[in-house]
Length: 382
Image 1 (tube, rainbow, N blue to C red):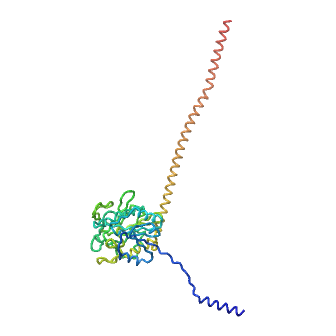
Image 2 (image 1 turned 90 degrees about the horizontal axis):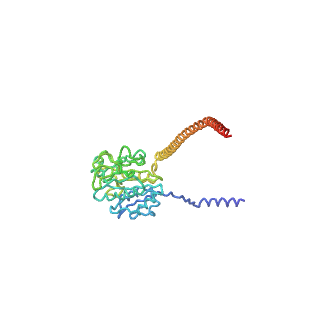
Image 3 (image 1 turned 90 degrees about the vertical axis):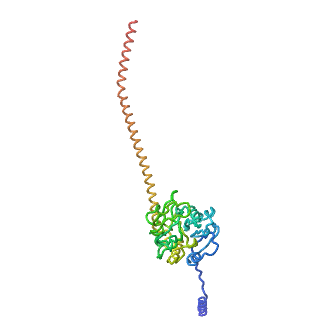
């Protein structure tokens, strides 16, 4: 017995000395696909972006976009590096197929109508937005800012002042962000172009502003056509970046400048001696887009959607109720009409009944007279 006990103790000690390997499955990082259309060499700003935002996996596409290349992406960032490359119908179909999976964030970057070639980016930008059903549009114009800039009005130092529902995107951002020669965000609603000013009421509810000009903003024009939603020379606060919340938990972001390339991207901490918060801001946008920062779909927006759905149902029921009431009123009117006809028929019937004895008595008298006359004539002939 003692030998057995000793053996068990020795075995237990040996087991304690054997290293135990525990395999812990690593959580997969969200995938961000950057479409840098026409990029031929390393872009230092893009390299810094990917090197500093390590919470996600990165994939860069520089040539043709295919569904297979983007199907697993949580977020897609589109930047047209080469202005001579226009997106194809096949690429648009691939993006839409990816987007239709749901739970996706699409960040489309546009540009101004600057004659140096920037204007060639506008068509592809708007084609992508249209393909996924967004109302956001890159208007054919340029924003300048005579107050908030980096030494020249076209080097706009954008103010990060999101609408309250997206206020968290401005957390940690105390300085502006470079939008070098930007376009302007507009809306295309029910076949009509509409402005989206940086302050005040919005034409529709599911679009939210993120970056704007100061009050020194203005509309400039370089290449035709003229802007669709704004007037050349118009002054005020204009929207440079906005997000649209769409069905199926999808988000579309439009910025009228890019985080990298486009002469000088947002990922900049200083430009012409002006301090900027570009990197922190871009990181906020990327992490929010993949669900790692803030509420990807803010709860207040979900509640508004539920309220809107319920209001729609109530409105539908009210319409049905009005239709039933209308049918009821028609039925009542018909019943009243029929009752009137029945009453008239009853009156006629009573009149006929009352006339029967008179007609019967008159017939008997006539019959007696005829009978007497016949008897008189017969008697005379005898």
